[in-house]
Length: 126
Image 1 (cartoon, rainbow, N blue to C red):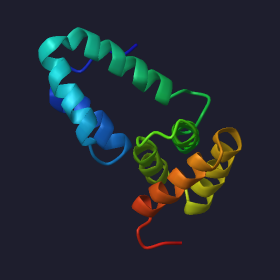
Image 2 (image 1 turned 90 degrees about the vertical axis):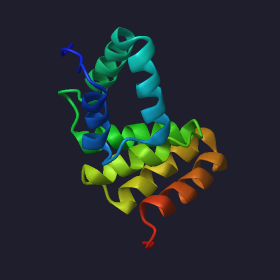
Image 3 (image 1 turned 135 degrees about the horizontal axis):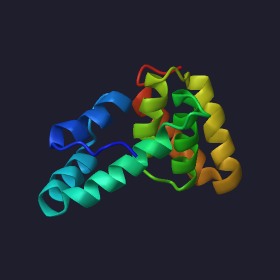
C-alpha cells in the first residue's frame, strides 16, 4: 500500500479528486479520525484507495460498480459514486442501466433510490 497522507487536507483531496468534493459525512469522519487514530484512518483510506483503483478496471467501471452496489444496499452514498462515475465519463444512460441491474437484485427500492439519485446528479433531466 502507499504511504498514508499525513494531513486532513491530503485525505480530503482523495475525495475531491474522485467525486469533486468531500461529502460532509465523510469530512466529519476524517476530522474525528485524524484526532483519535490517524494511523487507523490512514490504513482504512489506503485500503479504500487500493480497492477503488485496481489495475484491471478503469475508473468509470469501478464507479459504476460502486453505484450499483450502493443502490442495491439502498445507501444514500450512491449519489457520491454516481457523481464520481459521471466525473469519470459515465452517462445518464450508463447509470440508469446500472440502476436496472441493482433493481434486479434488490427490487424497486433500488430503482426508486436511483430515480432520486439521478435527479440529484442530472437536475436538468435527461
